[in-house]
Length: 337
Image (cartoon, rainbow, N blue to C red):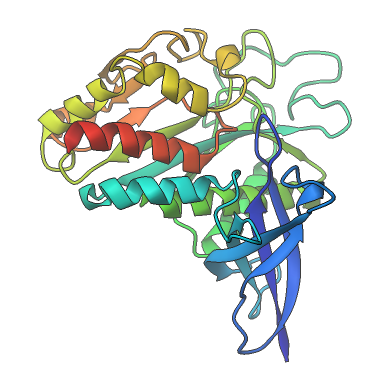
């Protein structure tokens, strides 16, 4: 008897990494070990030296195939030295957690995305050569005139649950055809693994329904919301006292830190962080209680409870979750050490 393992990894596409996958058929009882792929076809190697190594780091049930089949999240390595490949962002996060992991970071990521008509490339719910009514009724809306793509969302959510991912919610977003799912709270590596696996499942759901899924930061220019990946973060100290919460928020605005984070928060960020549509400008840093127009929000309940977490509202939908959690772990870890 055999089973299938879907090996999944992130490629070297610039400016935004993409998810890739390939299937390995294994004998029952065999573990999904080290494998490889043609890096010259994924922007990760030259054709004259094309092999890149895949090393499994996270496995879960494959809800698409069922049975004993699994999905396998992998890191990429150079074949001769077995050092992490330059595009292996997860390895960089591991290194930072080796230094600050004792602070017990928790992350919850809110992944927004936009469903596009594969022919027109316009968001679902936008009429051909036209525009729907202005934003307002679509956020968490109900009804055929407001909501488009719910069948994709329901299928994706079911798959995430069956895979054992820590999906904690979904909702329709502010622009028609735009949705969000949340992963967490879990540790920095797990949240990155599960965001990439959930993205893979989302793309597969789109295939079934002939919908293109976009993580573009600003899929429609004009008076429409962009798409982000708001990142909620806490440490043990933050979950115990409010001073640590404020100190963490302040650390993200320290000299040089806003620029460093913005550089790692995804492509097209200046198109989305304009100071409008519930954003602070990309070249300005601010934080505040219950302020969705700030770079970093301290939730009202956290302020009331005197402990909890902060929400970094700057990361784009297309940001690499490993990069985002690494930056936050480094900056906050230094401040609270």
